[in-house]
Amino acid sequence: MNTPSRRSQRERVEESSRRLAEAAIELIAEKGFSNTTAQEIGIRAGYSRAMVRERFGSKEADANSVL
Image (tube, rainbow, N blue to C red; front, side, top):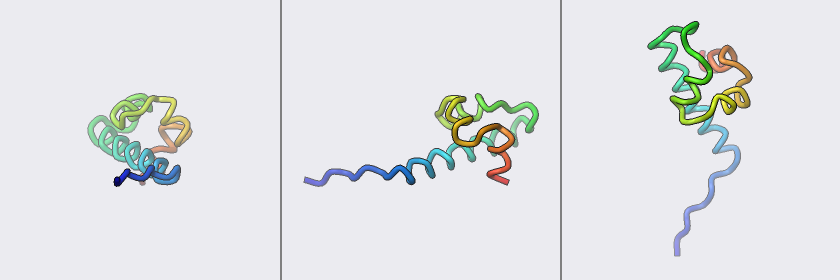
């Protein structure tokens, strides 16, 4: 029987970072930086605001990571 292997911690972190970065790019392009919140980024990516803070520390750090 073929069972799918679990993704490693590193793969999960990379995936969540990618999803958050894509959401940040989309929202900032749509609304502008000052009108975009960390909570909106998290919701767009499918995560909580707490996840955004944990991964990047702030909206500014999130934006800097994708620039």
